[in-house]
Amino acid sequence: MTDNNLNEVNKDNIRYVMITPENLQNSDADNDEIDFRKLWNVIWSGKWIIIGVTAIFTIASIFYALSLPNIYKSEALLAPANSEQQGGLGALASQFGGLASLAGVNLGGAKADKTDMAIEILKSREFFSQFVDRHNILPDLMAVKEWDRINNSVIYDTEIYLPKSDEWVRQVKPPRQIKPSMQEAIETFKNLLNLAKDKETSMVNISIQHYSPYIAKQWVDWLIRDINLNMKSRDKQEAEKSIAYLQSQIEKTTITEHKTLLYQLIEEQTKTLMFAEVRDEYVFKTIDSALVPELKAKPKRALIVVLGVLLGGMVAVMIVLIRYFASNKTTNGDR
Image (cartoon, rainbow, N blue to C red; front, top):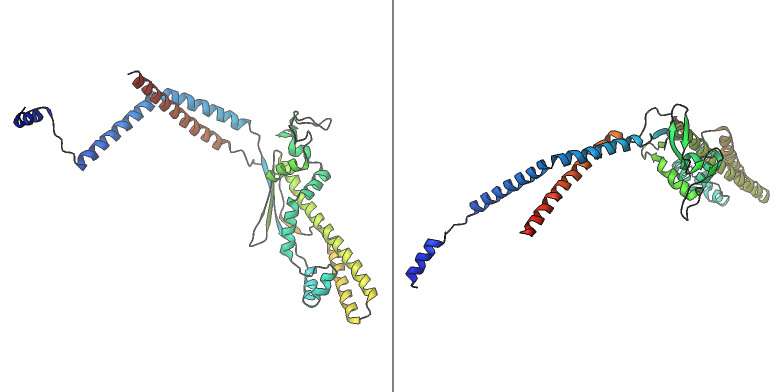
């Protein structure tokens, strides 16, 4: 076959197309439009599946939201108690800090440090153990199921605790115990307790969440009272030991200046004892007392239902798309 004949065949049987960037862009746009239309058609064809699945999720989320018991939050605002006795100690600190430290007497007057220490004590295992034993809060902490508003009483989960016989009956695997340990209880308590200190004002916000608004308020009051008693007891013991030591040193020394200093230190420690005796709000003063909350803090039932609807819609669309692509794959495989 000659070159002329070959050229004639090529011209007759082959269609030459010039590819330009504009052609490619238009082609991609057409494909995107077609894909979007297909996707919409697939979703629209499965609208009853989407409606059905979304309805199931919506109903389930409504029942779930309604099944959750209300949780109430009671809170109080505290301020560090003024420590007038610190003024006299501070005046002595610059002159006799060395001797006072030997006596175990703190002349620093660090009010902020005492507040921070009180907050850390509130979070400690030792304080919590004493709090549980003093007020017998373990059943209300670990076994309450809901609160009966009409009778103002808590309802216990009888699979965990029997209130009439004061018996723990829950089924747990080791290392958990039938009666909750302090380690387990304090982890639960920490989820209910919130302590927040404002760095600028040193104000402390303390709050408790519970199924019963009355218990939440009661626990806040108990915590404030107990931490004041705890800090008061610590300072009293320290002051009494310091006074005993200082008195023993007075008997040993014959230097008049030393005796004068020791008597001044005893005077300041005596002031500490006096303040501890007369003050109920020793480390924290209540600015805004805890109240019995009328409105729940959670759950946010409307939000739960909205999230349920959105989740149901997404799952339904995924089901429709998966069914479509699976059927296409099967059809193409058969071909």
